[in-house]
Image 1: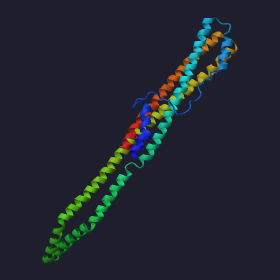
Image 2 (image 1 turned 90 degrees about the horizontal axis):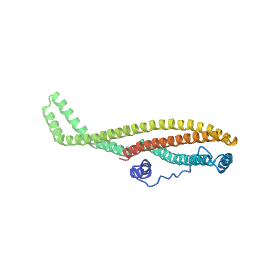
Image 3 (image 1 turned 180 degrees about the vertical axis):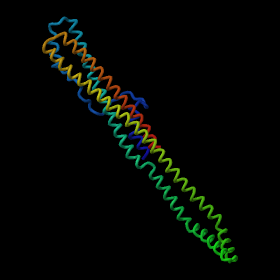
Image 4 (image 1 turned 90 degrees about the vertical axis):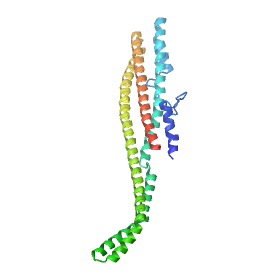
Length: 278
C-alpha cells in the first residue's frame, strides 16, 4: 500500500518540482483564457487607427502588440501549469491527511494484541507463583514451618519460569511502547510539514491577491487602449500599449512566482509522503 502511495502521488510531484528531470511540462488541464482578448478584430481596428501614421511608428506599435500577444500566451501557459500542480498538491494533501489517521495502525494493533496475549498466557503462572509465596508467608506467620517450607519450595521451582515470563512480557510491552513512540514522532514530523505547507498556502493566496490587483489595473488600461484606438490617438495608443506590456510582464512574473510557491509546497508534500511511506 505504501509503495502504491509513492507511485501514484509522489512520483508526479517529484516530476513537477524538478527532482526528476523531464523534457516538457505539459498540463493535463485546459488553459484558462488570457487576461486580454487579443483577437483579429482588435488588431484590425488597431491597424485602421494607425493607417495615417508613418511606417516606423506602425512597426513599433505592431511590435508592441505582438509582444503583448506573446505575454498573454505566456500567462495562460503559466496558469495552466499552476492549476495542474495545484490540483496534484491538493490531492496529495488530502491523501496524506487521510492516511495519517491510519499511520502504523496495523503494526501497533498487532503489537497490542501480542502484548495482551502474552500477559494472558503467563497470567496463570504468575498468579500461581504469587499465591504460593503468599501462602508460604501466611504459613510462616502461623508457625507452620513445614507447610511454609513446602510452599516456598514449590514457588522456587517456578521462579525461573516466572523470570522468563516476565522478561517476555516486558519485551512485548517495550516493543509496543517503541512502536507507539515511533508513530507519535512520525505523526508529529508529518504534521509539522503540513503546517509548513499551510504557511505556503497563505503565501499563495497573497500572491493571487497581488495578481488580481495587477489584472484590475490591466483591465482599466485595456479600456483606455480601446478608447485610444477609437479616437485614433497615436500618442495614447503608444502609451497604452507600453503600459499594457509592462503590466502583462508583471503578471507573467507574478505567475512564475506563484508557480514557484506551488513547487515549494510540492517539495514539502513530497517530504511528508516519504515519511508517511517509510
